[in-house]
Length: 309
Image (cartoon, rainbow, N blue to C red; front, side):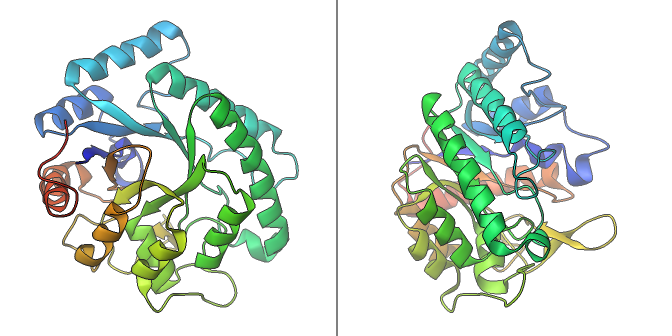
């Protein structure tokens, strides 16, 4: 049995930047569609640590979620303005991370997501070892902070950020060898990393066994799951350059969910959430209902009859 959520950022960034769907509308619609929760993009215009800075404002968010019958499956912390790979002083990043951990506690969120912030091109500027050392040193500290707050820490690896090769992911996990730290496995990013090798600096590294092989390499250290499709391409920035994996509604891409989902369903997570991620999809709002129907079918087929509520 799985509880199903969807990332709220799909309705606030990318194509929705100039016309975001407000939090009230999102929550009401997800409840109507039978979702169990949402994964919160903790940045405006949705609730975030800065706009909801008081206990009263945070409790209001908790009460809104209860009224909708929804839970939070996690927090995508707003750390993209911080310096991680490109600095040897991560104090500002760590302070912002800790602020988001406290926000999680107040909202009853159990897991917090990070990425490596800077694009993969920074490897050419600084060198792989410097990037690796800075990221792992900072995340070791963040992992301890997360544990102090009773949260698990999950890293979403993807083409758009540094350390985006299969071996990079394994090496980071080996360097932060702690049960509280793991990877967020997104089926679009998994495809673009393992099959396409998108935006990888230097020699491209892919896996003959594709996502199934990548999941096997990461098995036991996957602690959060996003499900969505891929069409072998990246989302484009305003200048037409590749950014990160395109996230397509189920059935519009090439991901073999009948091969991938059973492997992910076999992973033992500390929670029962599966999350839909429609990030950068231009019609995410319209595609939400179809994605909910599709993922319910995956749950029925591979994770027990019906969706837990």
